[in-house]
Image (cartoon, rainbow over all chains, first blue to last red):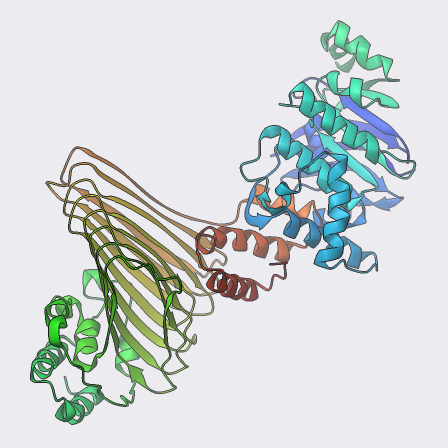
Length: 250
Length: 375
């Protein structure tokens, strides 16, 4: 098993948000975590990535059978966890290609692989950019600075492509995207899907799941998973609304 | 005030051949003797204590005479009375004149590279006249040694419709003393674009005063001070809108680490008849250590209603969310912090139009932060 979350209780500023969450993710699987606002979706993403403001009260998170919670956020990333942000941060003054080579080489060194020099990396990056149909012009621009919402999300997926994580958590990646941008982002993610990795899609809406078809859909309400099923569960949710599951959470 | 400067002045002034200059020097030295170096009792020197400098001795190698000719008027306008440093500068001034001829456009930047040797004091004084319709770039660079004292001045006149870019890069030893003053007058329809980088010096101060003398002038007065260890830097800036319809832009950034101390004091004056003024000013500081400190005081003094002005100052740490973003990409925390700091400083470095200088400064900033990224 790649990721196992056992009876996780976590929150922020003394407020418990996740109230006994269980989740099991295997390699090669795509999981969708759906839920209404305030159900704890975002908290789950942040806890997996190791955000310092979020506090784990109890429970366990195992990543490749190791205790994930004792690792710092950067260690988690180098071990193969990637989070695509809902609101990617702008890093002025640092170009995309500088940044991507830096993060690529950090991870390469961690795993005892050779670093890529700028020329080698440029070739590598060009190939990866095709996955999200990104113009090499973007390599020279500062990370996310002045990017449109769609460009930022594509840039997140480009980072995912470069880092080749074992587990990618896509936090509300569909929010704020028009249909063309959504298609490009989703196709990018589909190209990155493999038997060796797993993807968790955290989303409020079913729309994304038309493009990235999940193996398992989990419905989160009031800090717990209240319903699980196949891809058809997402459609049912779309039809019936979240009120349908909210009752189960109480 | 009987200092090592007095003895050396008495000796060196004997060699001054120009009567006009001798008188200017004598007067300037008398002004220095009367006041000495400024002390924190003066409002403009509240945060900058020169005692360490005043108690050190420096050797002055020579006094170079100069054929003053037509430049007497410009030299006489120099703010000798500004403080003890400017007075001392004129007393010992090593004067050079740079005249950019009418309607000429220089392809290559004018390179003014200055370095004082260990234990010495130097007093460069540049007179720069960008004549009507000319276009040029000046690069003023300081690389003085430990235990030296650089007391420098540059007077600049940008005449009608001329364009002047000016880079001042202070990279003295962190054990050097440095005082510099920049006095600029911006003429009709002309533009003056300056970038001031302060990286060196144990105790350094830069005074810059930009005055619009006719309508339609535009000026950029930007800078970056990046300090660590126990460095102290103080920038005092004055932008003076004395005439209508001029535009000024000011962005100063500070990065302060360890026990360093920064001071930014930026005055923008909009005088009574200066309608149509557009003046923007900002000073942003990043404190990388709890022992670092900055005192910032942006001041707008407006005496006309028909103006567009804004100013602001911030002092802060790196944003937690930005840091977290970089951590989630696998960058160790120290590297992530340094990369964000580099990004903060880059806004100023990036505007540098000359690749060679930009590259050098970029590298200087990166080295200071121990970041290795591709250029």
